[in-house]
Every structure is written in structure tokens, then in C-alpha cells.
Image 1: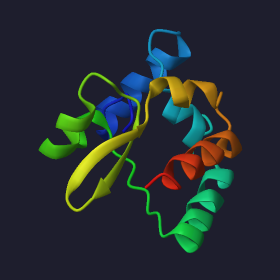
Image 2: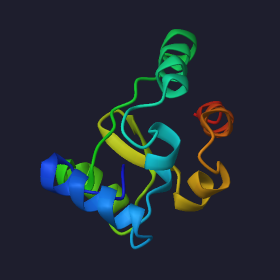
Image 3: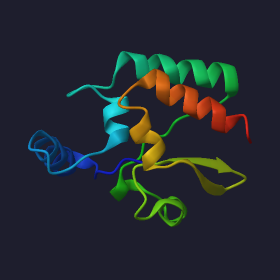
Image 4: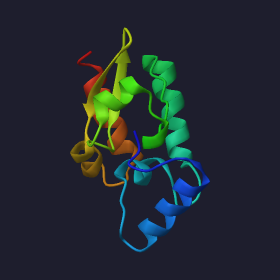
Length: 117
């Protein structure tokens, strides 16, 4: 769950806000270089899908379902896991901040949490 809105207006607002230090999304820092999704992120998505059956759905604040909103409201950015139609937060903004933009650090954190489920 990104701490930003999707769509052209949301993307532009985040880009300029981030450039001038007014907004931050640590999940954006992990998944994207300034303009495109990181190659490391794409490779990690494939690894986690193939090895653990984990599928990522990257969602912006304004794109959430009511169930996703209930599990994440005012706690974005975060990572939710869906199990039997229920959403639970497995990584919060502090976990994402600790990754410091590193896909490898993020992957280690996700693997550790997934092993608990």
C-alpha cells in the first residue's frame, strides 16, 4: 500500500512533492527508481511468486478496496497479506523505512514475515 495516490495527478503530485522534500513513501523508494519500477523489484516478484506463491499487488491510497482501507488507514505505506478474504498488515512504515530503499532488505523482511503464516 503506497503512501501516495495513483493516476496521473497523484503521480505528478508525489513526484514534485518528493523532489522538494514535502512527501515521502518508503515503499516507492523500494519499488521504483525515479521514473520506473526497479529491475531488482521485478526479479524479486518473480522469485517470491515461484518460491513461495506470493503475488504482489501494488496499490495506491485512492485505489484501495474497503477491506484494504480498513486494514491500512492512516498507516501507509505498508504491506498487507490477504488470507481467506481478510487483510492483515505484515510490514508497517517502520519496517519499510528500515529497508532504506533496498529491494534485498525488503525481500528479507517479507520472507521472515511470510514464514510466520
